[in-house]
Length: 274
Image (cartoon, rainbow, N blue to C red; front, side, top):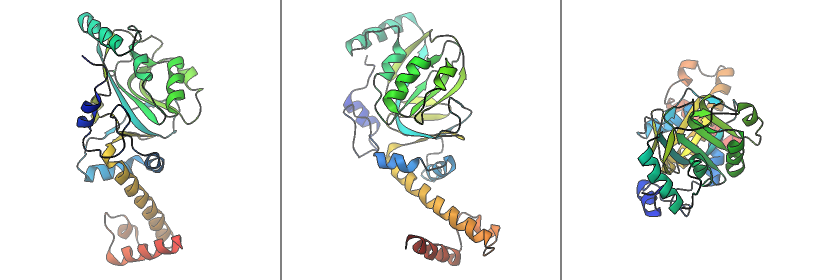
């Protein structure tokens, strides 16, 4: 058993991505694409993904350590299962072979793999009581390593300490509990996991907003960023023309504008860039 898939395994798992990769094989979506996606809304991302055939890419119903703080980053995935002694012994032994010597601190194994720009995405089957993946100490480590945060389908603890983290960090979670994490075993790092109704692969781009969490496949991230930018520009134009009473709301609030409105938009866009 391996805690971390091999480079070849990760490349096969994410074969749709043809760009740069980390040494582990995980896709490395460019920083400039991440920067562009920070301006995107959930709805803009969801709309393009839906049209591309990715219809299960949103999970809602979260609590946040820093409500309203948008996060964007590359997913490092991890899955925990309910504790079973024989399985846990296998995991502890496998972890030791891969350099993880703290067998009773398997949540820290995930954090040790994080890089700047990552988002730690953890499936702990919605467990809150004794499912607290991070407190203020490990949360500080996540913030320091990534500069972004985490998405935890389970619990956190030490909320008051976590809320003191700065630098645009946010941790999406299901709830808070004072108990420490226990009764679980790490099943793997950078493997396919489920968050709500979404399958998350390592290297996916996570967009966390006040609406919820959108998961963007790495190979679609640049297209989503471009589509979101186009939508934002069209919204500015549409609202301006509505305020000028040039067009009616029925003419503007449609999936595709008429030829004359589209021509007007293209001319307006040229003038804005002049």
